[in-house]
Image (cartoon, rainbow, N blue to C red; front, top):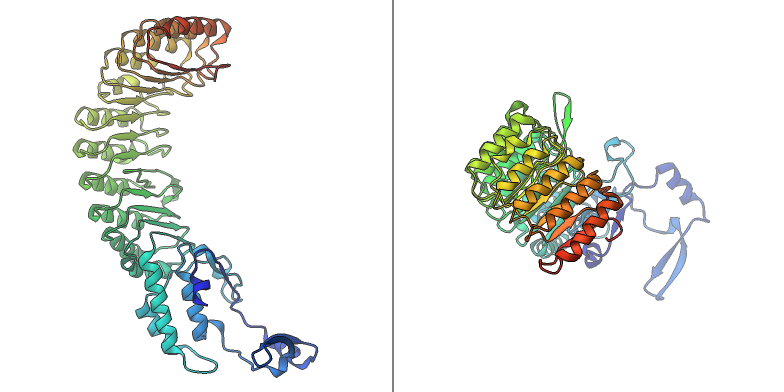
Length: 470
């Protein structure tokens, strides 16, 4: 029986409320109310009047074997497969589905002291099976997904995590967490010996982010933290800021939270990717400066993504200064920021740079002419126009390192297309060029294709993605 309850490919849907007393009494008095029951003596199922059966009105949650059923069901790798589908009338907070964490055998033993049994005292047998299944399932679990956990269940998870001896991935979706629970959970995560990936989707409070920051200072195994889709509220303001550290993603808002994670960044020796895309962190409150300063001391981050942030010229200058003192960054993305390209040009000593959606493409083109390490330039959806395309084309004639150029969805026009086509005649390194949806027109397309025909004979293969050809 416990195999069915604990199996990862089965589901448990619980109805815990008893039949209301008036309804129950009416059913007992009605001889037509019958239940089909299996009789071992005759090896058959036959209907019997309800009043002939032994009545058991003990609440579901008080019955010993029912407690065991719930616990076995909770040991599945996905808590969504174990749900109570009826809500107690007096518990409005239980109107939604709630997840459960498997109870440790020590705590379950204490709970069994009040358990009730219908026919015989089976507490010993129930405890033995609960401990056996708990350790078998939990110790072998490598990926656990906990959904809709109330605060009390988060506390249970913190106590149970040390028993997950092979856990690699932990996902917590839509859960509630108080200050004490956050500290306990952060400590359990920080000291876990095998955990590599952590994902949290919830209304993240500042105390939980702070606890995770402390955990990241201690952990030596985690390589991925994903807090995408979270929000932190401060004085009624709401925003989302994502940070990926070695594919680690954090969501933050208030300045002190950014400071805490920036400090963790300085002490962490495994971080490789920092992604702040679409977070509107701005330059106010020292948030951008905190991360820029951390980059000056960090020796492992290779990718920085600031796409879609309002860091402004002040924040851009802070990151530009950080880039001058950082020798490990290999990719930088400043898409969709209200910044000046010339402020960043001095800091672009990286292998890959992405800048777009600002009025100074010429400044970028000028930096491109003198850059000897840049390999990838992504200007998709940048509205650079003909003038910007011509400036980039001129820069490409003098650049010998860029291998990938993405100009997709730019209004570069026919003249811009012609300029790029001519530049390809003098460029021996570009291997990938994306001009899809760039409105180059028929004349620009003809010039580009005619040049490609001659260019192909003496250059490495260059993949041209153009309207009508890709």
